[in-house]
Length: 298
Image (cartoon, rainbow, N blue to C red; front, side, top):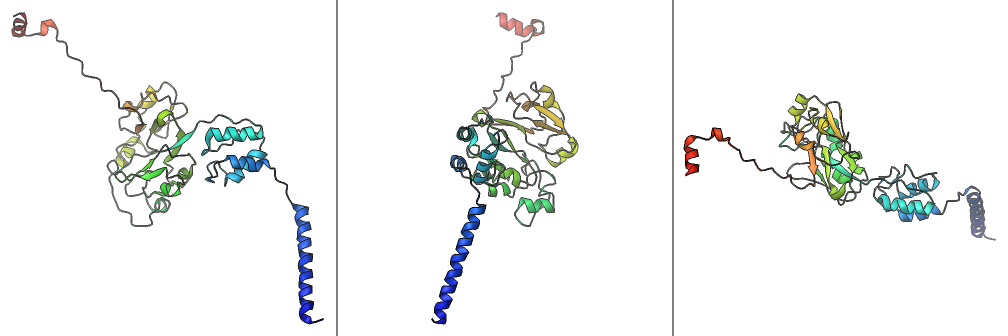
């Protein structure tokens, strides 16, 4: 028998033995997976956005199957309809959760925040925020370098050329939270989605005292408490010189909006307010000049 044939037979035998060993080990340590995980994954939107708090839809499906309840589990992209399907597949109950939408809590365009310098570095909010305060002196305002736009997988945010601020397209926003995590200034918030996408919120996060905040931005919240005083639904709280409107408590009555002296409270997607006509001034009879009285009699 030639040495070549012996080598081939030896290698073949070793390969067969190794294959048998691997098979036995795989059978010994294999993990049986619940088939419901596949069913739940098929019901999910398969965007793998991480908005649920887990790395992907597969991982979220595993958590749903293995958890006793779905109370703390929610898919923002699929919404309540998807969670109801998941609950039906698993024989569990999904809590009713209000849908959310991202809002930009900054109105500091260059008209409201005069440019004081020019940044000539990497076009990234994350980088710029670590180096300096921004093109204006506001330490908490939007840096306008579109990190939130880059991370949005749903094309739900764009930069406004006139204001250099991001704008959320409500119809496309899935509240996945990617933009919230990407913003180094924390100016993006997920708020309750109301009918006709109407929103009322304080578009400022500056916690400096009134005079300092107003110096940074003409539409900054100064913490004057006027909005707080007129709210009848306990939807507005004051803290650190800043007003905050709770979207879960706000009934969109709009009473707080005209009270704000700096226009820091925005009302989005509402019809224009009706302007009240000036009431005609009624002049008392004893105040009418004699000549006018004579003319009226004639």
